[in-house]
Length: 549
Image 1: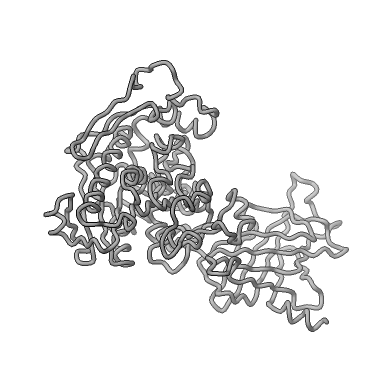
Image 2: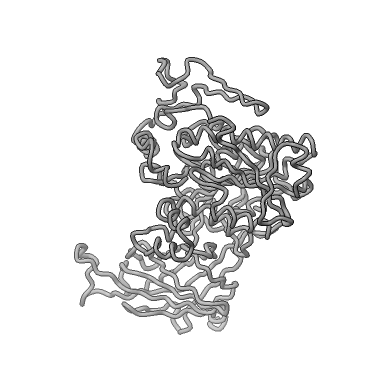
């Protein structure tokens, strides 16, 4: 969903944004199937249109909503959309072969029915010639010996947006017809099919999946919001469209705030990296992002960054996840803030954690005899949000650490102090520098414990040797209680530091991969850190404990 999304029908999308922001239709009164009066753009009765061997489409009142989806039209003719299927395999990794639902076409191609098939579907104002399609295709072929079929529906993905959304229904029928043809004539196992769709392509995948019983998997990459969010399941991507539906949300601010992606869960596993709204590195007002991208990656990528950086980040994360050795681990949590506070760091059964991206189907608890469990067993995860953090540029995958600072409370310490905390964590594998108060100054009560989740590309390898904690007291003239001159103590007293790293649990392992507790090496059981000073903590807690006893 690119530049044109910001243009035509802005008034309609404006009201969509208001609704999604909770300003209008809190009680869902605008659903058109609840409206008794016939309105000029609503059908008086079911409207149906047929498309040769593909079957028929209808538009009923359930496809309308006065705010979310006020206009509906039928798709353009098949000849205009001109849906094409371009096959790539390891025998022809760069020269695509056109295939269609015909014996002669299939048998002349390199399509190997015994191998898995991966479909890639582009979105609004996009084409199969985009750089990201080639990159994803190459990574898929590098990972496995599979068939990759790129769906070309460029003839139907152009503005206006209302027409493009209608065209996705017909494209979905075209995809389903090809798959069902292969099932019928070549005994293709539908469970071996994986459809990957971006933006409008995600909902297109849903339409195809609804017509293919037993379809294995759909991955939705930031499914388009306008005309889909808030609508019934049959209008959009939903968990019933495949045995496993996993979704990555990266641009869910709402169209009113120029966010193009859905924020509501629509799969079995819904991932929200960085809260699924604003992605790090996408704020073009703070960094020379567009000029650097123009020089490094060319005009096409620079235009994507300028218009839809957050929206296309889902593509980049998924593509990176195919062959990376760094696991994208999402944590089940009520809110992103609770996740950042470390409240959802362990993997409880359910699953409490899930793998985001290409390897989502390897999430513990989802597999039974190496096969994805039936939908009836996946319903517990529907509606659940999985949170994680990523980097602002490649490599996007970061390790996640939970750092807990336990404060002491000697008699001469203030009950609370306010300021900034930073830490440097040292391991033979590398050094991790972390801001423990990323939201600004923080009120810290002596005797309490403060926890935050930090993401970093360095893998400490479970071998933390030393932690340096930096402390700076913050005086705010607008808050007299924070003024600390001659009559108060601005020191911070830290008892110990706990560093934990989360990995996806294996059999019988449900907690962090490692947990390192670091203490003062002095005689006291805490470290006195002066304002603008540092405290050193070493992995000698057990040694000190036994020596004192």
